[in-house]
Amino acid sequence: MELFYSKTVSDGGRVLDAEESGHCVKVLRHRRGDTIHVVDGHGMLYDCTITDADPRAVAFEVNRWVENYGSHDYWLEMAVCPPKNIDRFEWFSEKATEIGVDRISPLFGDYSERKVFKPERIERLLVSAAKQSHKGAIPELAPATTVKEFLQQNREGLKLICYCDEATGKTDIKEVLSQVPAQSKITIMIGPEGDFSRAEVALAIERGWQPVSLGDSRLRIETAAIVAAAAVYLHFSH
Amino acid sequence: MELFYSKTVSDGGRVLDAEESGHCVKVLRHRRGDTIHVVDGHGMLYDCTITDADPRAVAFEVNRWVENYGSHDYWLEMAVCPPKNIDRFEWFSEKATEIGVDRISPLFGDYSERKVFKPERIERLLVSAAKQSHKGAIPELAPATTVKEFLQQNREGLKLICYCDEATGKTDIKEVLSQVPAQSKITIMIGPEGDFSRAEVALAIERGWQPVSLGDSRLRIETAAIVAAAAVYLHFSH
Image (cartoon, rainbow over all chains, first blue to last red; front, side, top):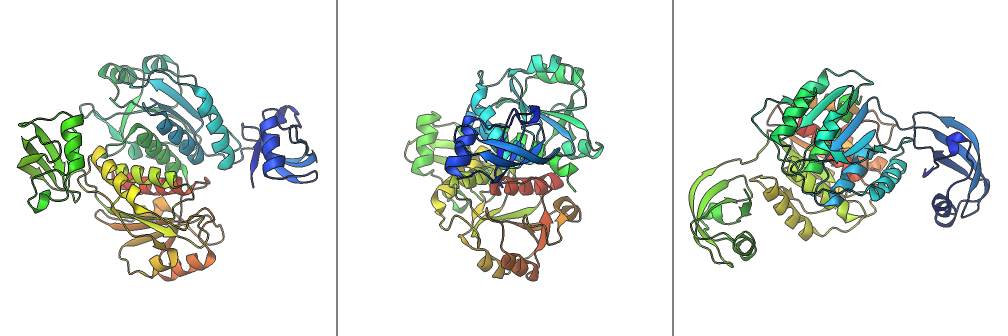
């Protein structure tokens, strides 16, 4: 069951955009009368019938809908310093979406090798990953910012910072998560290739972030991010 | 600290191969008298001093060594049906190595889209991923085989099969792992795009494999494989 994405359906829109329409009619060969399923990117899934199979503007009527399609029992923001090789951040974004993430926040750390971030490719990828993995909600992509600026933002919920340096005490992420109830809001920060700087870690702790360990393996940025997201996902799965 | 790989060092070999030597001398600019660290692919890490910085055949003497460098407290085999897009299997192989895996076994399922597997690229990737993530042991890459043939092999330890079909009872992977002590041997099977066939699941259960669930998200092959590997890794981390 392939999903279509519409920004307007929940506001009454009943026409797919050009890209979705082309895919619907020319690739998948849908015709008038076919059932299609449309998500709004915020959790709603609509069961629809095509009324006009125009390859540039498929029109449909809505039969019924469900809320929170493909949703999960927590709210998770992954704040990750994109590595130099942006493909790796793309892999992370796709896999985080499949697993279940609510917001992805690209950060520049003191020791980041990458100092620029172009959101367009990641935004398109998040849409296709959400559709492919049957999530009604597409993860938000926050504007890229520095670690220090991110730490100055007011933020509720559990705030975890993962870094490699041995000197500061860290708790295993499983232990921290074991105390966390369903519906919790969790944000996890993952540092750059060179790790977070001491100033960044000190500021994080001052701002209420808890240092956590992801175990003994030496993980790349995108691997650490997926292991952390998987830890949250697995904790809440049953 | 960049690692060098030598197949022969544990048998008394004291010369790096041409590829490692070129990287050592021409890229990293090592010279006679420099300290380098060499792994044998089976867990040994050697602290060495360069005696001849020949860019085609670096010679060294061994100062001291450690066993089980970068090792983990379990033995894990991931038996995974490579997806049609082999990049995704490469991505999985790299990330599984970083996290900690002992053997990767490519399988062809009844519903696999991919029916051929060329090991050479994955073998090279496993070596570089092990070096990059500071593991003295390089994961084994088993010869590719069919799911049915794999299930006929005699296999000790905990055997888990992950699949999507709702009909058969499955236990959450965390519950199964919670019973598992350190040093355990674990094998996890991940099915192809079309999932395992009923015949494959029935044979697996008959052969002592336990059906497990990886939660409610709809995960691609390589994502499911990494989430499963992460579940094992996180269970044993402390």
